[in-house]
Each structure stands twice: as structure tokens, then as C-alpha cells.
Length: 117
Length: 113
Image (cartoon, each protein chain N blue to C red):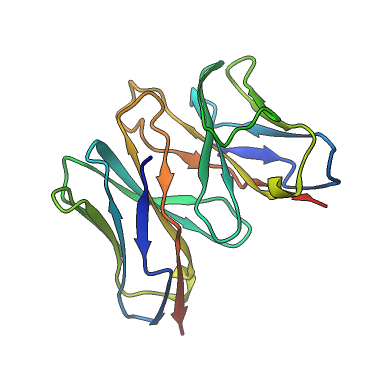
């Protein structure tokens, strides 16, 4: 069990640029979540995938944000035309299938810290 | 939408003392209540969780209690150690399609040696 991995760990970009983050979940986990965490706050839900299907999106996910999970394994989160307000830690989490007794448990990656100048 | 209130926001204890963090919620459909520990520069780490059909769960020095009637749940850490110093978040989810987590605002725990 290698855990959830995210890449890059840090990203500094200029306002208006596009950025893309990657998340690799734990291998047997078919459910994947993206959260955003700003300084001094708890993580906030952005979007959820079950296998390759994106089943829920938060109102926080503006049309500049897009997430994909094309083969039901890794996922990418893209932010277009970044704004200073997008500066945050972007966290990915994964969990087991519903048939598993401990399906509720979500395991988080180390996050990608985005700074928009 | 669902909201979780977490208190206190900061907590300073002497090594060896106990620490208690409390969260309250409003949605009675919530049925899963995990606690996460987050160290500087790292992602949240699941330390203990409880489901709505259980009132208390313990794992070594850590315990969680749930009062469904009053809609609050608490984290108890006994015999605190300096390495317990971190930010702790409560969270909850309901049995809907995504089981997304709703987090509290966090408690910064400092254990003084």
C-alpha cells in the first residue's frame, strides 16, 4: 500500500496561466475525491469520481476548473486562467468500493500547494 | 448546507494531560464521523472514526464519543505527548451518493514538554 500520491507538491504560477495537478489513488480504491484547503481552514469538497464517472461537483468548482479520471485510475485537476483567489492546497483522497466494510474511510495525499502571483 | 462547528480553535496542554476537542452538527442524516490529524505541510491523516450505530470507540490513547441525540461528537487524547502537537479536524458524511466529507475548521493542539 503506497498511499495516495500527488504531483507536483508545489506550484507557483502567474495570474492568468493554466495549471494541472495529478493524483494517483491507492490502487484498489475506485472512488476519488478532490478537496481545496485554504490557510487556517478545513478542506472543502470540490468533486467526486466513482471509477471514471464524475458524479458530483461542488458549487465551488467554477467553470475554470475541470477534473478528469479517464481510465478510472489517476485523476487530473486543471485550473484555467488562474486567479490569486485560487491559491490554496489542493488535496486528493481515495476510498474503497461500497462493497467493502470500511468504504467510508478516505485517505488523503500530501496535497499540491498552489501559489498564484 | 451542512455545517460542522469545532471547538476550541487552539488548545495548549502540558505533556501527560488529556485533551478534548468537540464538534457539533445539525444534519441528523450524518452517519460517519472521522477525525484527522494534519501536520505542517502534509495531508490530513485519518486517526479514528465512528459510525452512527456506535456511541464510543477507543484506540490506545485516542477515543471518540458520539451523542446522536445532542448531535455532537468529541475526540479525547489521553497522556498527551509532544508528537501529538498538530492541527486536528473533525468531519462527517451522510449516506448519499458521494459520501463526501464536511470538515470542521480545525483545532491547533500544542503539547508543552
